[in-house]
Length: 148
Ligand SMILES: *[C@@H]1O[C@H](CO)[C@@H](O)[C@H](O)[C@H]1NC(C)=O
Image 1: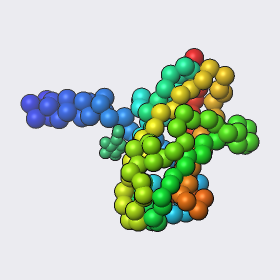
Image 2: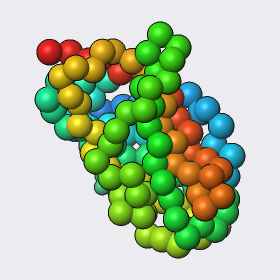
Image 3: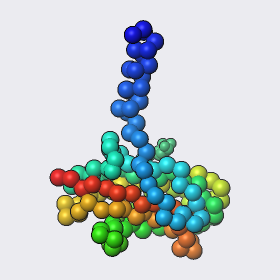
């Protein structure tokens, strides 16, 4: 193996180690926005393995198609097809990395914490961020594995 090939391998291994791949999500009806990328840290493999008692950094990058003074996050854990409210510490999107009022045709990073309590089972997470009128700036669904 020549030096160039070897250094490329080192480079790609470094990239793989430092940036985990984006979370694979399903869009569940982002009416007035478009999701660009969903990132959860740490989540080295998918579905994300969430350890009980730990908190995870969630970062959803989306484009808004509307103006909105407010934004409110609504999270559900879907267990056996039944959506159950999943409490998060900060529901206000404007206090989660988004500078409000939200402008039309702007890109935003919604950044918050997801604490995992010990009583949670593995589930599908449905995460919405609603605008002033209750429409979804984004709605994403992704599975998580809860581990000890
Ligand atoms: C959120 O993700 C975007 C896109 O990957 C990145 O540019 C931004 O720095 C991230 N923000 C935080 C706080 O991690």
